[in-house]
Image: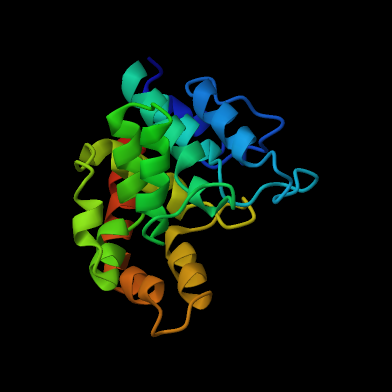
Length: 204
C-alpha cells in the first residue's frame, strides 16, 4: 500500500481520458463506461467530460486494496447515468446511476458511493426522493470523502479546480430555483469539509 503522503509527488488531479488511462483498480468499471458510450451519443474524439477522475486513483492509492478499487470504480461510474443508453426510473441521476451499477453486478459499496456522491443527500431532499436514495446503504465516510474530493477538485472539462471554485462553477450552471442549485448551496460546507478531511489525510 502506498503511503498517502507519497501521492503528493504527483499532481493531485490527473484527468483520465477514457481511451488512454487504465483504471487499474476498476477494469470492469472502465469496460462498462466504454460500453454505455458505444452507441455514439458521446463522441470519444474529444476528452469525455464527466466519467473519470484521476484524483481518485491518486488519493485512493493510500487505502486498502478493496477500498481503493471501490473508490476508483465509483469515480468512473458516478455520472454514468448521463449516458442516454442508461435507463432512468426516478430522473435523479445518482439513484438511477446506482441502480444501473447494482444491476451490472458491482459490489454494494460501489453502488452506494454512486448513490451518495457529491451532496446527493441534499438533492434527494430537495426533490422529495429520500426514500429512493435510502434504498442504498450509506457508504463508509472515508471512501465517500475521497470520491467527493476527486469530484470537487475536477472541473467539467477535466481541469483542476479549487473546491470553492468548483462549488461556484456548479451553482453557475443552474438557476437559483433549480433543485441542484439549492442542494449545492446548502451542501457547500459539507462538501468543502470532506475535501479538507482528505487534504489533511494526504498532508499527514
